[in-house]
Length: 408
Image 1 (cartoon, rainbow, N blue to C red):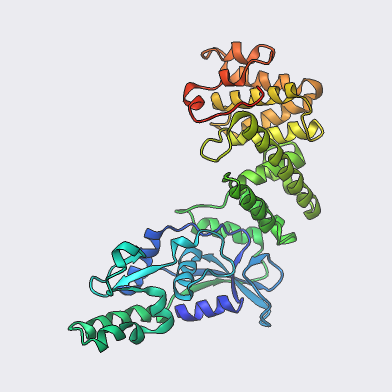
Image 2 (cartoon, rainbow, N blue to C red; image 1 turned 90 degrees about the horizontal axis):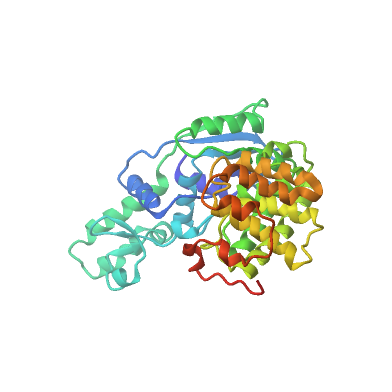
């Protein structure tokens, strides 16, 4: 298929993304290299698509087409998304990522180089031309200033712009996976095999893929929650949020615990986990001054804190109760509690919460077992909490980052 045909099929909803695909992750260097390769006629590889019945598999960017099938991109998302963004001047409907990676790409007709728009460099240099303008308006209109001005290199520039416009006509081969036996699980295995040299799907992706098969909106509902935190200055990953949901719903860290979760239960778990995280971020921001992603430490302690807070009825009514939890939280990242095998350690701490009234003491003991014999860890952590100022627990390097401990 030609590049132009592929983009038209995306516009018509025939080509989309399976829900288990991650978002767009390419950077500007990769986009430049792609266009440079296409412009020079170099191969850029083939695509792999999964042809499945429309409406039977959770997909992003698919619309009713009347064809009865949808072609889901398994390999080639980054390349096709980049080309779509450059040629159309906007991201495709299935896009999730940073559009700055592919918008405002320019081509220099003199040097034949590709660079993203630099106002100071390109403002008074007509040899820099928008690639999107060439793709949408055509080579001749973009070359007209040189042609009408009788520029000595006008014909050369036109030839180069024609070569750039012909990128839309480049054929890209697509391998297709078909058959009723190709379930989500089978296709995910195929996806991981072909991405053996790249980023494989995580366990979280696999579980989310199965959840999305029953509730297609699940991923988007999680992304909305993540976007809300991002606007507050906290950048969390999808896997991290899924870990919090898993902890709240199952009391364990392993994603496999969600395998039998019903869609409505998952939505309720997302709501509960989101509300608990909000409360914890407010507490950590207000009491410790960790009010931005750049200074937030120990984020993998939050799934445990979510469960602890929920067991307390969703709130810590006294300052002493808040101090106790923050005291443990500070020590958890000071001593690298979750720096190693995160899932195993989380399971240990979540299991400790089942001790009921002694849950907090059990969490403290978990830290002691790991840190026994290390500098002052036992004396600080093992001693009953007596309301010591939390600031004294923080390393000097952290105390200089602007922590505020109002009311402590």
